[in-house]
Image (cartoon, rainbow, N blue to C red):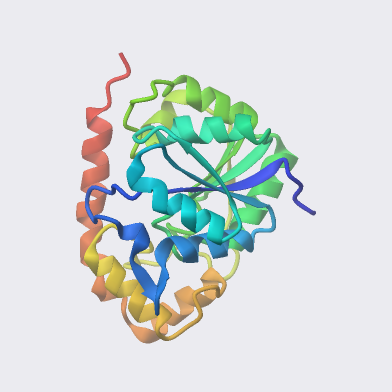
Length: 253
């Protein structure tokens, strides 16, 4: 199935990350930054790519990178990425979008494409990886209807939506799961996201030994072969606790 201009990969990014400053600009392979790697992987999905960042001046450089990588961009709320996504859907007249976090430099472009197709075919409002899917390969896919419902529970332009699981739950979306195929199944003790300096070290070690545009299943195989998961896995508990603390602090009143 060919993905037309009603489909998009929305790369979510801002430079003002709290735990690791300017992490999106950090080089992971020679002088190629994390955001460039994520954009280039997103292009392999086969749909238009939109970089969704904020209106803040600190993100001007991200717009320049989007232009240099020849992808679309949108600027909106600094704190509310759900607001940004919703405005992307409206401005670009989207029917389906897959959301890509800029701190997931090994996300799966093949899983993302399968998710978009499945989202269209089964008419669900949101699609997520099943429990058997390796975390970090996909975030969410949303239909336009699902995006509208999600926006209604987080419409405040200044609302902090850094961790969105609680908003997704509140929106009560019609959900479907995408199941892993060979090489995509969850494995213990492998952390595929960037929030800490150890995560940067992990990906630099990985991309030193393999091409950064390889299939995610190939990257996971290389991680096992290189035995590098100990570089950053110990950070995962802290990461999960931070997400839990954020969700506990959200007030829907």
